[in-house]
Length: 333
Picture 1 (cartoon, rainbow, N blue to C red):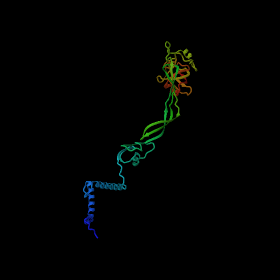
Picture 2 (picture 1 turned 30 degrees about the vertical axis):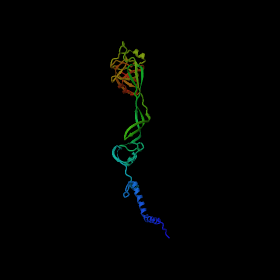
Picture 3 (picture 1 turned 45 degrees about the vertical axis):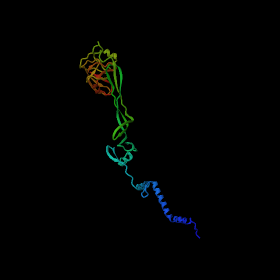
Picture 4 (picture 1 turned 90 degrees about the vertical axis):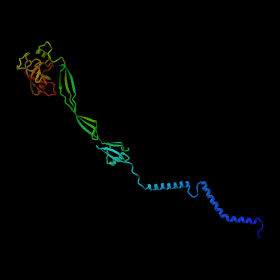
């Protein structure tokens, strides 16, 4: 039987009320929590917050970056930038646009072939600058023949008058073969180095006799026509036939003499004799060859033992060779 206590009915009513209001209370509690969260964020719950918008933007940017990376993986790389270079080779210059990384790549692309001796500026492994230059270098061996100069030998002669010279032997040039190493740059010789040499024909020296004596003229106080005793003192006496008269008349004939004949530079067609009068025409015969020449006595000499006559160079060459200095002759007048 139910209780009749006064508190029973109200308590039952409270529990009944609580039972009926429970769903509403739960809903109100959830709404209050949501409102509290909105209040904490300081924004209405009906629109997105700044944080959520930033998060969404970050996610979207990440998706776009991944998409671009995916597309670039299958895309061709962009070409390297080109530069203008002036290329000079084989006598010509041209301007080209190139993206080559090195000078070697540039020249290979242009079809320029190189030898081991060629010079390239800048080097092949360097990047090309504003100008690339190729110099063709050629190294060859060249053989040349050249003349060897004639050396002169001078010998003093106390018997020859001072200041006079006489060529005892005419020299002749020699021949030398020389090997050179020649370097050409773009066809022009830049260096020539002597490697070796060989004497093919040696040069013969030119022998000159230099007078250191007292002079050709007759000493002062002595008659122009040197007496016979002077010739005897010099040992220069006629070897064949009579001795010439001390003062034979010009044009006289019949005298002859043998001995040495030398030469010197005087008037063409003349000669020097110690005693024959000036103006005497003398016939000179080379005893070795038989060659003859005539000359006119115009000077005095030679004052050298063993020589009987000095001939002008032109007369001497008519009976002897250019390399001879003294020949044995017979003179007739």
